[in-house]
Image (tube, rainbow, N blue to C red; front, side, top):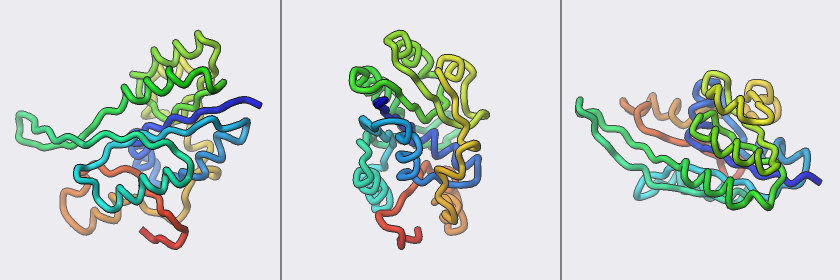
Length: 198
């Protein structure tokens, strides 16, 4: 059986969901991409506010319960020359570290991101005989990354397998509650149970 490892860039997947207008079910993502073999591990990378809020804590707990290994970094605030404040965190180093240090334990790496920064690590993995699948949406996927991968999967083509129907993105819900909500990074949320109507 082919050994599969999943690496999810949470910020990138959330941005893709906002563009698509529908949300992902992370349990279905696990099932879909692992269906062709045996899942070695699934890593999910996300930024978290400090102190962590209840919704984000429930989300990371839910991912862990589903079987993901969750890697987090605190969101950091920065102010530009115009006085605009943004909050961000970069987990590229964590993703590349896990891609390369666990390479002996999988045959195929499924990388959910369109970030061109991963072109070189993908080339290194392929040189080691690994198969690399990149999944994202065309408008958010760099040509270089798509070219470096063995296979490219567009989220639009697998919607029926990975969508969480009837679920609005958290930013859409909060956008009506207070101004400026769209400027606050918030990553895809998932409930611990089906009766959670967040």
